[in-house]
Image (cartoon, rainbow, N blue to C red):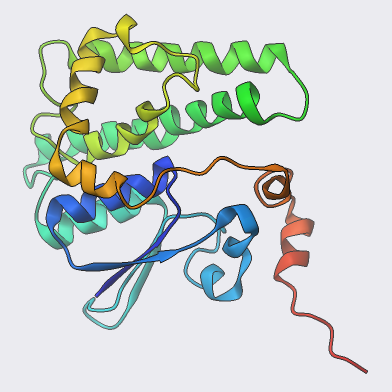
Length: 235
């Protein structure tokens, strides 16, 4: 049995889509990151970076295997299922480079655009402009890549599953899909896939409220260590 430790954010949605596309039996374990459940010791044991998603494969050879980081989880599930990651060297690395492009670029930059446009405690015009423009540039990279192509890297793959959730909230990032016709066509085609619809039905992304800010923003090594420390014994 596969257990997906999940919150309906873009990175969580990537894995939910992959599990649905592969038809792999799994159980979703909700992790409410808006209320600090990512700091529970049992979650940190499988995800030491206190982030979702995380996956445990209880049927892995040699015993249960715990994984964190969405890119690593996608690669693992692709290898486990034999799907959505080509076996040939050229095809495999075409997919992997776009997967890493998303993990290192599109996701982090879109996340910063979300933050400075909607969640920052004060308006920082430079931050808004910097990250909105960078996301726009990255959308342009995808637009050029998808011109004349159905999918990002050959056949439908984990590269598409990684990128799509980060385009869902394009308006929140200050982007208009009508400015990117090839990207818009690809986005709509993936949105209509039955597996993607099933994954999205696992729950809509929840917006952070003020209580959630203490768990999501401003963390330091010391503050995280304090959350992880066991309570002092009564004297």
